[in-house]
Length: 244
Image 1 (cartoon, rainbow, N blue to C red):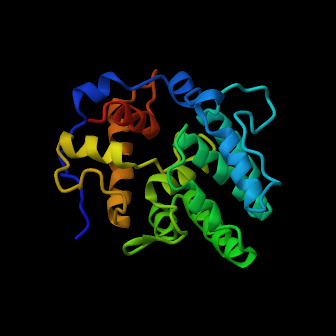
Image 2 (image 1 turned 30 degrees about the horizontal axis):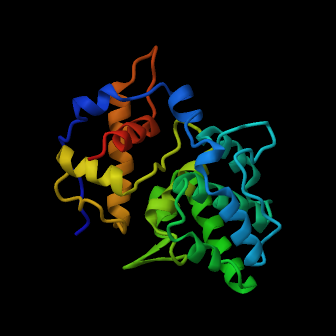
């Protein structure tokens, strides 16, 4: 059975204290160029025959010096029903770079999933489908599209990273249902009282992800006032920062 949070689970006070302003704490949040492995990304993409892509801290050409959530929200404007596959891949490389920071992790293997043209088409089709579901508010199908029992639908693109992609596909809308879930956030929630949620596990059930998004939406609503609305991603950022 998928782990579901207790119905009466409350937002911990220390997390509440760390909820940031959405403009400065969300849209302006991201690593500076020096804290991104940009030379590695561009060298590795070129070596894989994907040199048409350039990963940068300024993907929108607006003179940014850090890769922020806001710049990724704007980059997500380039994907949609009429966009070509490269738009989806360009967003993917930048989301992975943002999430990885200076670390390489499994990114070489993730890139490898898009080298063969047939595999690339199939995998981008999964990204397209998941984004369509996410933007329509169908959190379950958006997540389910990219996960299989015991593995990811796209090799090495597991929930900790593909939920980032689904989140940024919302273009920064406060009402967007999909929120980032990674091991740090899961560990924090486990210590906060969601004991059935395995700490550090990164292949969560679809129902667990849906319940997580609904929990953060409830907590955001409880914190919101008419003068100061709170969005679920502000809770996610606070949970990440407070992680044990």
